[in-house]
Amino acid sequence: MYKSQDIIKKDNEFILGTYAPFEVVFDRGEGSKLYDIEGKEYVDFLAGIAVCSLGHNHKKLTKAIKQQSQKLMIASNYYYTEPRGQLAEKLIKNTHFSKGFFTNSGAESNEAALKVAKKFFNSQNKGRYKIVTCLNSFHGRTIATVTATGQEKFYKPFSPMPDWFVYVPFNDTKALKNALSDPEVGAFMVECVQGEGGVNPATKEYMTQARKLTKQNGQLLIIDEVQTGIMRTGKMYGYEHYRIQPDIITLAKGLGGGFPIGACLITEELANVIEVGDHGTTYGSNPLACKAALAVVTELQKPRYKKHILEVSDYLMHKLKNLELSDFVKEIRGLGLMVGIEFEEKISAKAVLKELLNKGVVTSTAGKNTLRLLPPLIIQKEEIDFMYDKLTQILKEYKNA
Ligand SMILES: Cc1ncc(COP(=O)(O)O)c(C=O)c1O
Image (cartoon, rainbow, N blue to C red; front, side, top):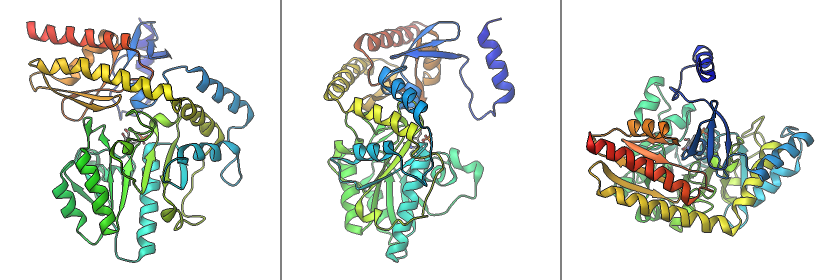
């Protein structure tokens, strides 16, 4: 019996069944490659779901973690440590934000954002309490963030849910305008590119109007950058593509490059309503996570990464666009290294995923029949070629079947 079978058996016996993992046991990674426990090599087009932007086993990141872990892992937020201020400065410098709060995950970053928004509404005393979010969005799995997530399948099993979220169709400016005209609405929370929803980029017009309307109405614009942030789209933050200034952004995933850390960045006006005791966390801001993120952000802010991401994402998009001519592919869409391939109904994205996995390419699916590509930001053209060859092989097999 293969070693992987023992591992899978134990996992299935003791791990709560909230996922249905594919039967591959990953053991180690190097750059954009993953290796399973039997030694088979895979090209990683998932990056731990948009997490390990620098790839696996990046020397600067592992060195930072090793050194800081031997120095100080945690001291609590009752005391000062150096890395958190350094990281906050790095994330905030050259932006319009003024303060940051560190968390351990995307959902917690969004929880922090929602609490800041609610405290702000209450300080205004205008009876605002509702938050508008988009259908098909994804904001996390805590009670508030899963309700913010405009997909019934995620929150329905846990109803009744908080009743202060209002959903609007994504990229529909008219519907947004209508929802924001409710005087009880205080904020609009949105992703620049709906990731879990199927890699749907927001249009320029939508985001520009979202900022304009929320500003006119005295409402907050919260952008969930958990998946789009930290260079995933080719810019430090996804909102930069739209030339707008949100009041709050949330981060996680790519921030720690594999080490769990999230953040919520807010403007001065909002920071002014937050008082000691309003929010807290045991692990958030710990020096180990902050030092890891500092290594990631310092590396990714080097100009060569921006150039590389632009080059390889163009290369990837260009190649994939050929597939739109195939009978099986409905649409290719994305921003930077966040790319979706939506298939026609006659083939299933999940079946393609499984065949790619057999052929040594790791991907994921999202939204409606869409294969999602989220490679490490260091992905090379040859690795893109490898993935593309396997994908075209699979589509050819479908055609000949
Ligand atoms: C846009 C967005 N927000 C929030 C989350 C939740 O992040 P986490 O799983 O770290 O809690 C995700 C996760 O996929 C996400 O894509």
